[in-house]
Length: 177
Image (cartoon, rainbow, N blue to C red):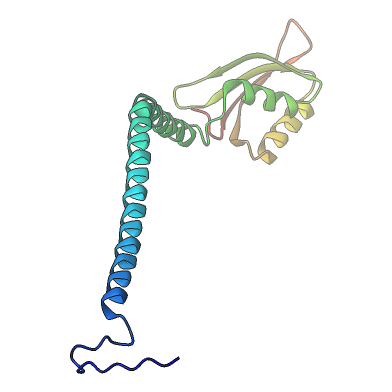
């Protein structure tokens, strides 16, 4: 069935109901914008809640952070001190290690009676031996050893009471102070 509309053009109803269409579109737009707004408000609320939780945790960790900072400062101070000590003792040899090294290059027929160190770091060795070649062997060992510098045979004399020789050697060990 066909309907005929005899009303003038101005009063005729349009084929598309524009008023209803505009109303529906505006309601849909309001719903979309309000849902987007609600979603963003909810996200902001969650972010603020997480931010407050992080701030609370940060406040709780402040004492630990202060302890860590002071311990880091102490560790840096210790590292500086250890570096200085390592620098100072780099070439320094201990008295014990010097004696141990001296014993390793000593021939068997040679005995020490006195070991002393002067203020200038010179080591004075006094001892007894059976023959002159043993003293010569000991001097040769010290001259070839990189641990000792400039060994000097100060004196060798025979002991009248025993059939042994007394000797005195001056030598400077490397790094000994």
